[in-house]
Length: 449
Image (cartoon, one colour):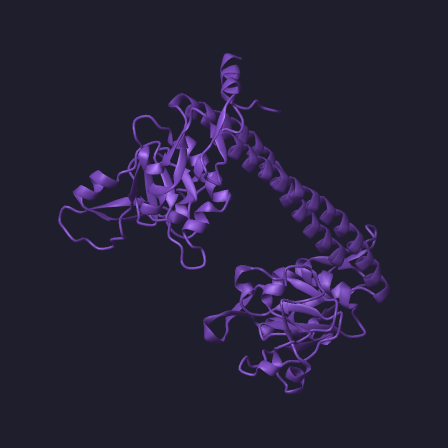
């Protein structure tokens, strides 16, 4: 759908705005709105007149609206309750963290206040906070807020900075019309995004189910089955063996060469993996590299290409258990383990097996040193795995490579669709709030229909 432009424009010398309709005003935000920072957290009673009340913090403020799933309470004085009580239509803007993230308060709770991680923006007589919400969204997306908050340090979008931001002031009826137009159009786009996100979830579930079924049931639906005797595994083909993993693999620990010796790191060409590198199922390179001298000094060991890499500390706590194949020789740090299968198990099949149902049995956690959570190696060594004949392992590996590739392509298409929709949403908002398109008649046409 294309929209007309306004008949006349003027240049105002503000980069994020560009030219604006001739009859629009441009001024600091404080010209049309009051800005108030919230209260510093008070966890203890200080006066007999204090009352414990619900309050919002920056984490409650999301672009999609105010999240009230985790609302906390603190003590407020009578004067603070009078000054800081939220009213329907208030615009709430994050002061710290993801600075500028905003939401409209819609009276989600009967009585609520706000902490000093939030700026409350309240309209003066002739302005519309929902229109301003969309303006802030555009200012944020164009990076202007990050610039004035100096993102190179701990950023704060103070009430003073927010008050001084230059914004446009169309007549109130136009602000209302633009906000209504964007509510309708972004609602449609958001619904399409939600459908694509649901598709991504279904594809991920399908992928995991496909892997788990293939590595535990095989590819022959008519194969006679037997009880494996293992709760997480259930039945397996009758001719498969059940073998403790310690009889199938060898483990290699990782290490970190001392950072004090620059000869171990400078101009290094050998990939050195840490947990942050395990974002894909197959890695060809890492973000850090070490030198041959680091290996010769014993700071790390070189693992051959084809080694399976897993996390044994850190991400295991969040039930994130990447199983990654090293496609080139590389070293790993102490939070990882390298796995090599022996002659009884194909390494690629083992990787698929560990990505399938077997992964659930690995989430038995134990305290490790330094207060972190780690994979218990005794639980690892005692874990039993289904082992088909080698030729079946290779057939299953080939099947899964093909099938998951199909599913991954579908997921990539869905992700690209989501990105395009988000870009469309951002572009539409920017065009409407800066007056590049005139949407007044589209709103009246909808109302007339």
